[in-house]
Amino acid sequence: MRPVVAIVGRPNVGKSSLLNKLVGRRVSIVDPTPGVTRDRVVTLLTLDAPTETPRGTPDIVVECMDTGGFGIYTAEGARFDDVGKDLAELTPDIEAQIARARQESDVILFVVDAQSGLTSLDRTVARLIREEGVANRVIVVANKVDGPNWEAPGLEASALGLGEPTLSSTTNGHGIRQLRERIWFVLNEAGHPQPEEQASSDVRFAIVGKRNAGKSSLLNALAGEERAIVSDIAGTTRDAVDIRIEYEGRGLIAVDTAGLRKRKSFADDIEHYAYFRMLDAIRRADVAILVIDATEPVSSVDRKLAAELVRQTKPTILVVNKTDLVDPAEAGAEKFAEYLTKELKAFSFAPIVFTAATKDEGVSELSELVLDLYDQARERMPTGPLNAAFESILKDRGPSSALGTRAKIYFVSQTAVGPPTIVCKVNKPDLFEGGYRRYLENRLRELVPFGEVPFVVDFVTRSRKSVHELRTAGRRAEHDASKKLDEFLAEDLNLSDTLPPIDGQDDGVSS
Image 1 (tube, rainbow, N blue to C red):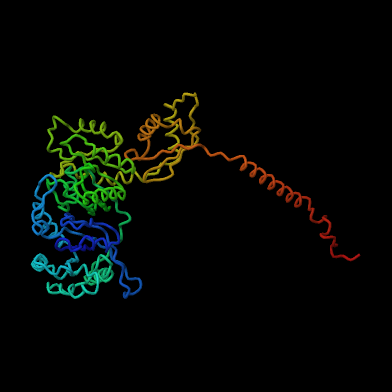
Image 2: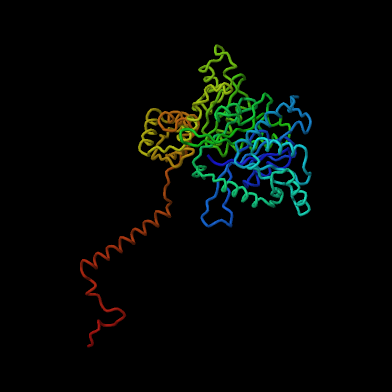
């Protein structure tokens, strides 16, 4: 297991900004509104060995975790969502996530605001840290030290009794390198063994769906613990939450994304941020899980998400969740699968899984299915069997042409994976478009080893050389043939002995 670094503190001290600065890219949503971060947001962070260490000292890869602000809604007063539900109900869930992060982490970055000074909430967090017996793992970070004038106020954080603070500024980057090195030294001194880096081989899958479809419940069931906050308050998840799972020796990174609704219904900038974070999570994922609410008809939001996954040629599992809330007599699995295939025609080939995530039903097969789709998307079909498959399909039914032109396939090859890409050299690409393309691709799914994932088929004309290229090639061939003939004759007839002297000179014998 990799070491874990948790970032904790009260609202709006710059925890999410600090995570983004440490990692070097935008991972957490940053907004002045308290309570933007609710779940634990986890990402990998590589800590370079400090410059004063011997050459060859290894870097340390950690899981860096951003948490929600302690006392978010009690500190700010009751806040309500766009349908009038009191968000203060989330406070116990958020603080439970923070407590778990403190208990599970190897290093705790306790962030305070140098500009506003220490508050009662800061002291409460410090007290909880001491009571839990994890004070020896704490680095106090006095953030917002944006200039020399704020250094003295930042040093006042030592009054918390948790050691000398590291001064930082996420605005101008001051102190970030020193903080990274301090974390490295703490972990190195603790003797944490550094596991072999597996980030490149981890399989990423994004969990997407409309609001309140049960994505976070599904994530928690997969992870085997409560990593994402589950609530009947729609829109609980804001960030894309990364969680690493080990399954049969392979690493999976599950990404829970914010629930989507119609963009015209977005309540604030935070929803816009979350929407674009969701799109980015899909882009970076190897596989997607599209969660459909079994208690509701397929919506326009479901269709838009499916269209985005098709556009990105993303291997997708359709998960029908909340099946425990539906009467099997009214909507059995087979009947709902037919309905889903009709509503989401673009994913008629995708596997469908029925789950009741809150009861951990139907979830166990998802990890294996994610890996299976990942492997399918990277399968290569040998050229011989691939050509035979196309010949078989064309023999059964070829494309029709109003002009009576007969379709011909000269050669087929797979040129790429992820997604599998097939290039067909044909006489007329237009003959293979429209309805015939759909027919061919559906038949092809029965014959290729990647039938449950999106693949690309490109029809191109067989390349022909231009007249100029043919003439040039002909002249070159004629010249080469003439040269070879001269060499053959010179060698066979020994003409070099009978040639006259060069430049009118004799062969060295005086007259």
